Length: 164
Image 1: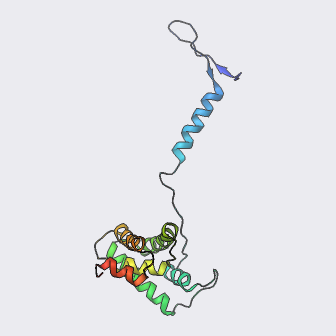
Image 2 (image 1 turned 180 degrees about the horizontal axis):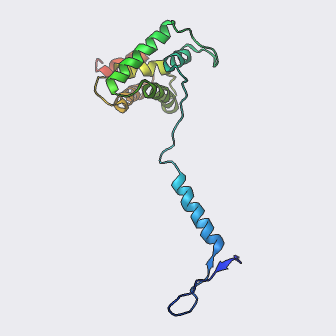
Image 3 (image 1 turned 135 degrees about the vertical axis):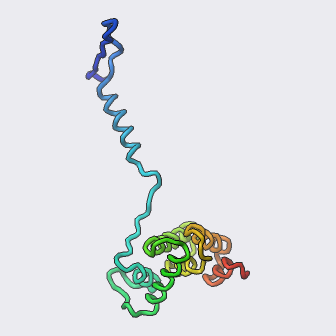
């Protein structure tokens, strides 16, 4: 039971309104501000460092964290090229495209249990038609992998392109 109560006096009639519990007011405000502080949608933070292309290539190569691939490694060069293509095609920055590629690889695994590298998802985004939003490109690859989880990456790309 709450012992801390505030009585509000009506100035016109001079009578007291129902007493209000101070703890109830504080609890209600805490809940209200707590709800306002909640994010609209949970965000997954992807930290790819200063060189997203190198990090994506390192993940694809299975390089342990803390070790880097050399800048002249062919996988790093390929990742940079795909990042530029995908950014130009979608109108997004290279950092956003790289983060989307990593998130998409994780999501495909979560849903289908098919291991896909961020390098593969980056290639799929880079192969998407120019002028389409990033979400369309990622969704097309996800749908291709989901529809045929036993297919290879190349077969998924072919399905995206409508060749099969």
